[in-house]
Image 1 (cartoon, helix red, strand yellow):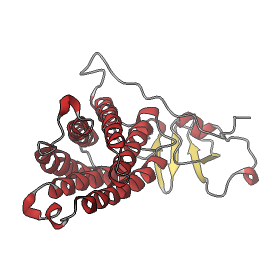
Image 2 (cartoon, rainbow, N blue to C red):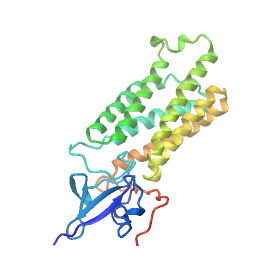
Image 3 (tube, helix red, strand yellow):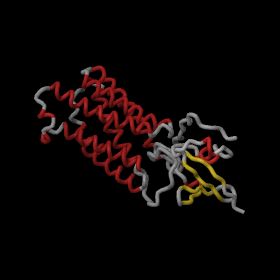
Image 4 (cartoon, rainbow, N blue to C red):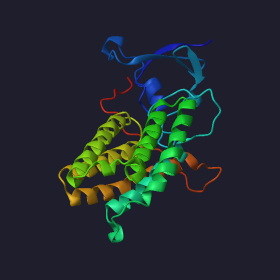
Length: 276
């Protein structure tokens, strides 16, 4: 006989068992109105009903930086490879090189070497990865990778004389302020994405937290202006690049192809209720 139970689920929880069982036996009136209902069925509750679809528990995708999936989600109906490691790697390498220059590593201050990376790898390749994330039904991954792909393309355009963007500012200070506004906008956008990863994993959240701090420091470095803030932004940017590579490796390495794999460390859910 198949038994059916009512459960309640916040879409951002990362532990499937906790999500499916942590509210069993609780009074419906005590649940927040924004929390949605999930049904389970089967001999051992092996089926999970999300909307009008039914899935095996094992099929549900948990929050994981290697897939840029910030919460529990049903698997895609499309059989594509995981595009997240490609997009993360493109972002990481471009960020790494520019951040070293911002930090004035070995006295280097000219960032022109980044233009090629910004247009083709961090820009075009990351944009393509974002479009493939859309194809596998990952809204967060599509938004993040496509947007940062656009960021790198726009950064490249600023540093290519043919576009005339930098040349339009005859006053150096005006250019610094304009770049400060530009970077501040990206800091605000990144903060929004960071909020959407607060119930995912430590590495996933750390990627957007460090990136947001990088944008903020670089923005202040231009608006203040402050060379020390720009250097600090470069240093945090290098850290961001390594966190991005870590998440990329997490999505790439498996027990079948690597001796060293990455384990996800979920962020504890604040205010979560214990099972009765």
